[in-house]
Amino acid sequence: MRLSTWLPALALLPSATLAAEGPIYTYTPATHRIAAPPPPDPVLTWKYFEKGTTFHYNTTAPAKNNWIGLFYAFGGGPDNGTKVMEPLDWKYAPDKDGVLRFDTSKYATGSYKAFFMAKDSYESLAPPTEFSVTDVTKVRFFADKMTLRPARDDEYYTYDIAKMTSVTGDPQNIYWMIYCNGDNWIKSTREGVLYGTPTKNSKRETKMAIKVTTRKNLSYFMEIVVPVRRADEPMVKQLKVVSMNMWLGGTLINDYHAKQVDIITKLDADIVSLQETQGIHALRLAHALGWWAYETWDASIISRYPIVEALTSTTKTAAVRIALDGDKQQVVVWGAHLGYTYYGPYGFCFDGKDTEGVLQLEQDSGRTDQAKELTEALKPYIDNGDKVPVIVTGDFNAPSHLDYTADSAHLHCGAGEIKWPSSWYPVEAGMKDSFREVNPDPVQEPGYTWSPIYLNNSDYDNKPEPKDRIDFIYYAGAMKANTSVAFMYQNPPPKPEPQQKDNNWPTDHRAVVTTFDFNVKID
Image (cartoon, rainbow, N blue to C red; front, side, top):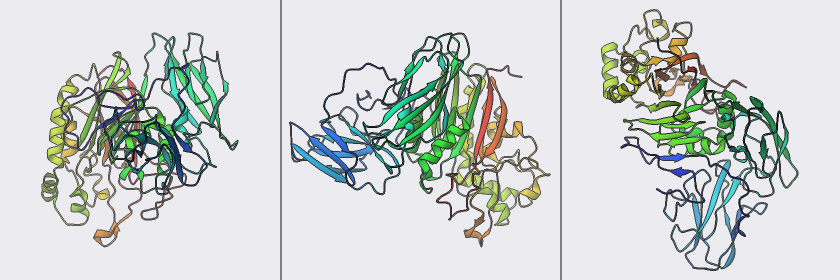
């Protein structure tokens, strides 16, 4: 599929036949080149301060079935006249000059895009216009401080900081660089595009502050750090990987987009494996962060560094190759979300099953076969790990055999040693469990990821929900786990479901966060 002039981000990667569920979309942040010619006079404009979400349009080719459709800003609009996704809403725009109002009161806070199209087709009559659904009097950046992907001496660098604000699309927003240390190699346009080329004299950590001012003279600031690498220096020395189940994209939490972006920036993550993305939410996050995305209906991956290839995946997984530094540094990343029923620990804690009965239920759930299929597909990547390391992440919906030992039986309703298939197969094939490698004692460091907010189980007479580690980051090859934690934002501690709406932690799982030392010798 050729990329549209107005939608450069949504495309298909080079790939083998994919087994991922549902449609697959990708997101690639644009490279901005400054000093472009001035844009043409707009024929579709967002009336920023009019009631509702209001657009003015005009055209020299009126027709009764011309129409305006609303889409997510991060993708889904027409691509060279071809439908990509269904519009969120649409109305006919039959006049030569007219105004249309849409009710977006139930839309999630964030950025959207309106397209003006001809005669029931997806052929655009005008450049699209971006608009926001938010309180326009409360402009803010989604983070107070953010580290961007590294720059390199004598290589052109660009980043669009405007996508990190709660109000986008208004041409009256003005972005200012308040300060920049060192030789001021990086500049900002008034639209919020950072650009420039560092030199050998540039600060190795270029720090700056950016201010956005709206037409109401409301301002907000964000501190930005751009690491600068020398020409002969590796781009990545440490790689921070996060696996997080989004819990239906985060939609059960108020202001989930801002909270998710804030967490990812606070963690200073490089690669995030996401589950329950519903075909859109990885694209949404990548759009705000200026990252690359590989989106399926469920398991998806976003990356600070370019996703250059989609790999042949298996049932309930997604797989990509990421270029950390062109051909010099690359990594293969798999994301998985294995089947969730029947949940094995319920057999021990609620249903009185023995080990044989629970393992049969694992087989019946489909997870055992899914784990076998995944492990078989991983073998060539494991064998090539000394050249290109491989990382396997995700919500496996089952515990680990490394956690179920005789000493930990009291933590798991009396169950002792259990060879949970979904962990046993990848470890036997040569993958290392990063959390358990850093934290070898399952009693002292259980690392529970399920669940910080489901405290009792209403299906089993409100008995306490079993606590287990079911989210993982495995790896093989020329890297080593340095730190690994089961992470949850605790400011303040989240309230249990169903009082979770205003939680700052936007999911029902803890995330796994592992920092790897990259390009190390294999023992």
